[in-house]
Image (cartoon, rainbow, N blue to C red; front, side, top):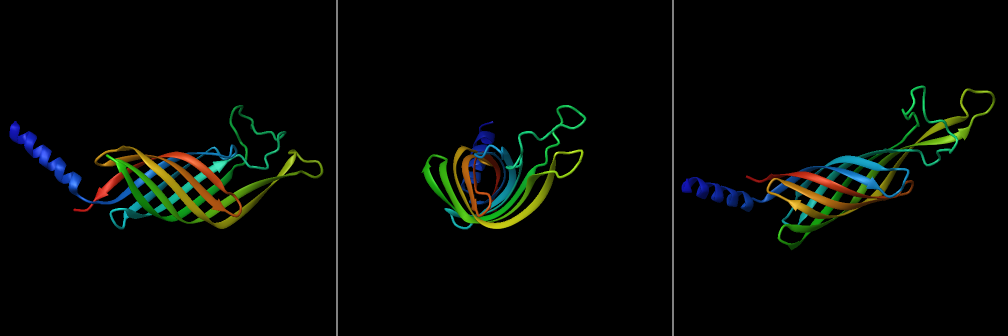
Length: 191
């Protein structure tokens, strides 16, 4: 029994001493603009040195259009099913990040890098003539480069998993936004 406890302790210490290779993560964000309520995404962080890493990230969001008229009928034949056209945002970013070790498993992370954003916007125009609907909807796609900034702090750091609370900014020419979110990642280690 004592040998089992000792072997388990040495195995767990050996796992702790292995160096972190990367982390695959998913996140859920709540946006600052009220018309874009939330976003989901996937990403991968790859350690370059002990403190620096690269982060490749994909984000997807949809929202009620910014030009949404107040008198637009949004429900279809089935009540409570929302048929409102949505704006869609896809964002791919590559950021360089740095870890700042505060104290026992509490780290502050800052990331900065370019982002490529695809935004599909719905613009409402009053319909002309006699029609069954009161608005025509024009779909306008936008592709833009931006700057992606992320600040995060660990709220739980276990051997295999890390949970972070973060503040994210995407600055671009058409649709700049900020988000507060939670990220959950699974760590991978070097052998």
